[in-house]
Length: 256
Image (cartoon, rainbow, N blue to C red):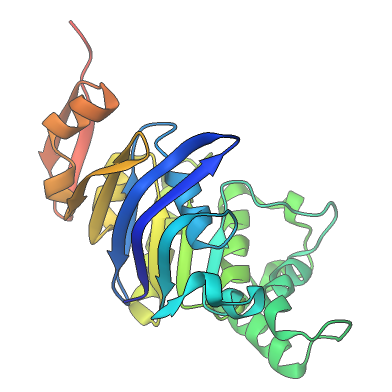
C-alpha cells in the first residue's frame, strides 16, 4: 500500500476536524476524497503530508509517517495545495527547482542530477518554453502544470492534490486531470486528491471516500459513492446521477 490511514483524528484550534478516519490507497491507484465544505478533506490531506499533528496511525509505503524526517517524507510525498505560495517575480525554472530541496544539502547547491530532474519534469509537462517566464505571467492552466512539475521534480511517488481544479475553467480542468491521469498511468505514481466537482471526480477516480463532519460515511467505487441518496443526505442537495462512460455524472436539479 502507498497510504494506510488508521483511526486518524485532527484537532485545530480546539475543534475536532477529522474524527477517526481510516482509508487506504494502493500503489498506482487514484483515490478522491469528497464531502461538503468543512468536512475535513484538506485537513486530512495535510495530516498525510505531515503538515499537522494527528492522532492514530499513518503509514507511507509501509513506514510510519511520524518516524520519517521531513526530508525522508518529502522524497515519498509531494503535495500540491489549493493555493501554492509563489514568491513574487519567481521564474518557472526556479520554482520547479524548489522540488529538489529534499536532495540538496543544507547550504549546498543543486547538482547536475537535480537540473536533469527539473529538465525532465518541464519536458514531460510541455513547459520547457516557459522556463524563463515569471509564474504570474502564465494562465491558470499553465500555472497548475508548473505546480505539478515541481511535484514531479521532487521525485515522490505519492501525489497529494488539494482541489487541483479550483478556479480553472472546464477546459483547463480536463487538461490538468487528464495530465495527472497520464502521469499516473506512465508510473510510478499514486494519487490521493480532494475535489468539489463531483462529476469530474467520478470520471477520474478509481475509488472515492465521502467525508461528512470529519468522518468517513461512504467509500468504494464512484458508482457506489455518488448516489442520489448519499449526496442528498450529506450535501443537502437535489441532484440527478447519470451513468457515464467512465463514471457517474452528477447534475444539480432545480427546486420546484
